[in-house]
Image (cartoon, one colour):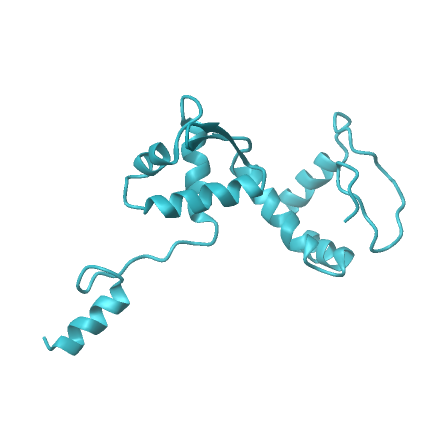
Length: 159
């Protein structure tokens, strides 16, 4: 094999000669880090999270993911000397819901996006969504009429 072939295989594989690294799905690392914190016996360091995930990720990668999760409000952190101890504040469903809200918030026609989303649901998922929206234990106000394009989230913040 020529040097050019070695270089090509290495650049495509991302490391070992000829090895093909699997590309992670969007949000996959966040879900893995969050899952690790959820099984932790208590608040843990980034080094613990890294080790729990197999130790193959760079420490800086784990710190970046934890910082992003903190900005999204799905993990909390407390100072411990010069570093932080991290705790899961939400589960994987909470992280997925955050992503869905972020996508919705980025669109100008919320009604069209929600209509398209709901129309694409399976009958079972649509039934589940209707049941959740009609749950009497839910404290969110029902049937509130709001001007088009002006909505509030469950905390009363305008979207």
